[in-house]
Figure 1 (cartoon, rainbow, N blue to C red):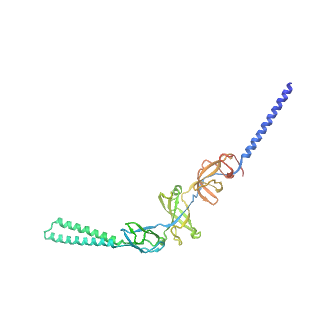
Figure 2: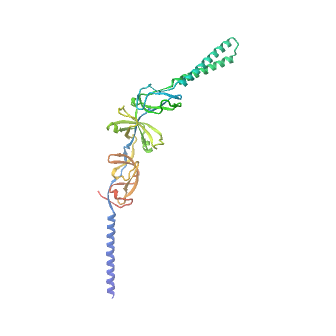
Length: 349
């Protein structure tokens, strides 16, 4: 009886042992089945070029809105949009009737003040008029003289003249229209003098990385792939409320023919100030946006972790990462498409 019980116990123990071994094998098989093979590269911070890629439109740095100093009825506009103009050329005139009439009135007032002063001066010499009367007459004469100067000045500004040699960009009024003092009538630029710039918009981070004098390379489809050398000539000190970007101007190093105001251009700007960053293969990037994206990293070569990174310049098949990888030792460059945050991985060569 005891021998039978012993045999049964031994058999149960053997069955439990085999069951445990089978369970371990199944768990290992499940782990191996859920483990995703990946390739990784070690991360090492280096001085990245920090190239800033952007785009904008060509214009000149002397675009000017022209207007009449005094309001009135526009008499003639001698140019239309797109016309070439020369410095000093008459572009538009206002009807001079009202201004001329005012100038004549002031002229008559000046002549009367002059007669009054001369009469007061004679009477004073004859001891008929007092010194105070003579001084008052002199004051009225000086006031009339200044008013006459002002009237003649206004009379000379009944025309609009081109301030630079260039082109008419916009005509903002028409003949016969009544305009007030300072109301824009024409917009011109100095394109003929070669003062072309490319205006671009940047994020605050890109803007802060650049300074005046940094080198840039510009291309435009309209120039058949020609490369233009330029430099940063101006940085805006405030944000553009319409675009939400910080403005920057790139001046061309030499005059270029074939440009027109509003023409589209692309630019690569190279900051003189180097920055510490990581350079990884472009294929390692997931869900990339304009300034940020995601990558998978690992610190123990066993578990993948999804992290958010800040993007820098794109360099052929690589991309600069300016932030987000400070706590990682390796980044996964192959097999990322099959991973989720916390996936088990197996590093292969």
